Length: 145
Image (cartoon, rainbow, N blue to C red; front, side, top):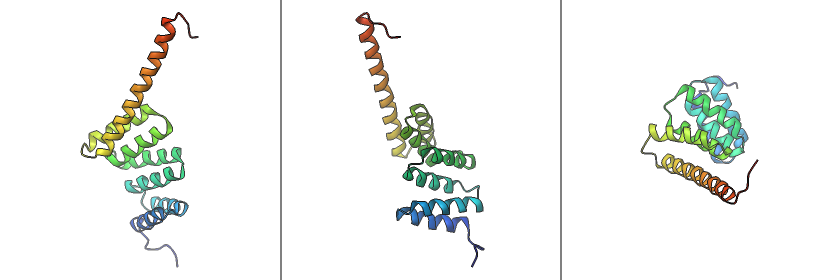
């Protein structure tokens, strides 16, 4: 029996069940099949990105989140997920950009606000540490080359 009559929505539903069961490789394969059937369905990119993050494939997840945003540039979920992926990669500028956009699109989603604030605090803390270190060396007459 072939794949005739199988819809992207049906594959998405199956893939989500597999992902919840921890069967990530199988879920990823079904998400990819769903994209082949309907490459304009932004939610597939979101769920595929999520599965890839769970596998530790952050670079690939970022690429799929971007693809999803091409189909739905006003998705707060995709902006949030992209910002979170950048945060996990240590890219605070990218994280700030996309988390801020997620907050602007959906100001009622507390997770976006919370994570955005965490990244801003972390960046400010890092900048303060660098400033304090440089100030200490400059006060003591040491030069950093």
